[in-house]
Picture (tube, rainbow, N blue to C red):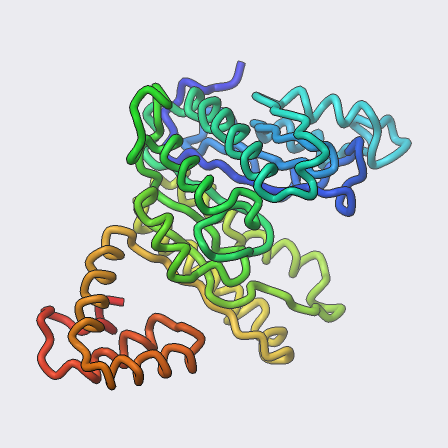
Length: 358
């Protein structure tokens, strides 16, 4: 039996999407399942993985452990009898670890974004209910999405769950701002929403929509990765070193060391800096690919927004026109906007500048 009775220090829901380009239906070989390190029984880190199977039109929640991972990594010999890296027995092996599966969604939803979003809203409500059953009393909750960025408007999972539906989903999951009858056992406010692997998600509208639901939001305002690796950088030792610095490995190590949520956030930032400054510094410089990562403390968002609005309202009509030009010339960069307002407001009504608050 799985050691679900252990109270998790960090319960982590890791969400991916799988397509036919990645693994044609029926998917009978390991792909995304091998990315995240799996905790051993009794670990203070509880990992759950949810897959949006685009090629099979379903959503499934899994819980894999370290023993499962060892078998999956040796699928050729251990599962497929030395004949192939994929086989029907592996599909059965993977699905035996499924906790809940929802679908298939209607074929019409493949070409109707709102229909798909509505389906995924309902599917992930069931995912969160099942997730919550296994992690009662978890000290911290984290949600990570692995994939591309999208609209940076508060939508989830590359925009497949649209912003309005994402708000509904997170209200349901956390119990924040929803009727108590909708979800009898909500998780409460999450500790971390981790979008640090998704391109250009760190935008104002994303924060404005999602800040109520987590203590911290991690995201980048630039494209993430995109590196073209040379032969040396593709070698096994580089790959292994990179794995140890990715978010999934960092979260496991931090959780098992019982780190505070603030220290977990620091660990994520430090690991990414090491990846940029040491392992792939030459790659980044060679391709001139700027990288960024920011961690936003959600409790500071509303005071900052209110101060920003107050500073803008205090501008003269001419200065507001200058502000608009400045904002547009800086691609709506919030820091540049705050800096401009600080320069325009002679006497601040707030104790520290907008730039310092940011």
